[in-house]
Amino acid sequence: MNDRFTSFGVGQTINSYGVSQEERNRVMRNTYWLLALSLVPTVLGAWLGVATGITQALTGGMGLIVFMGGAFGFMYAIEKTKNSATGVPVLLGFTFFMGLMLSRMIAMVLGFKNGPDLIMTAFGGTAGVFLVMASVATVIKRDLSGMSKWLFAGMLVLLVGGIINIFVGSTVGMMVLSVVSIGIFSAYMLYDLKQIIDGGETNYISATLALYLDLFNIFQSLLALLGIMGGERD
Image 1 (cartoon, rainbow, N blue to C red):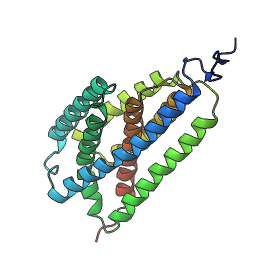
Image 2: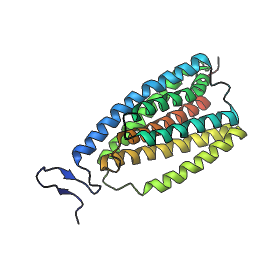
Image 3: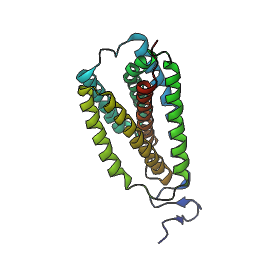
Image 4: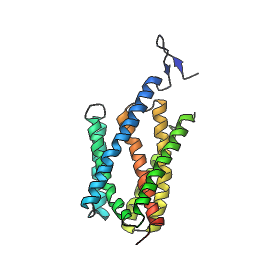
């Protein structure tokens, strides 16, 4: 049976999720606007962290505790407020926190002679991945909902590997984890974009959070790789 039909009287295309094309377009539009806006507090948080050095002491286990506690606390708050007017400022507060947490790595990369170039390259690479995944998501017809369990399993393995490497401190391990992270979160980005396009995600705050985490992890992993492989000392 065809899972697309025309609703009576309005002529709107409804998909298998029961979401009209107009509604899906609205969610996508609001998600893109909020995603762009979320980069502002991220940059501010990163700038503040680099300027003040406030995150320099967050190394090893302490850094992990602060990051995990803050990130999951914010994500819980976003989930609770996503259907109210409070959801947007809570999300923006989360992106500021993530920028602050990223500032330690940015400060390390800026310590290289070509640090600013590495940061811009990582930003450009992340934007490129987003453009590719957004293009693929608009043309691919296959239902990607079955990817979620495999991607989640991969993310858990990546998380455990990352925690172990914090204490081991292996450069090779960091490179491997970065490459795997770029692959997993690029696939997650495709999945998240397809969910919005197909109507599987109808809350633009939740959609923005998912895409922001994809972008953040890809950027962070690219920056780590570039710093390890291309950093030039004075």
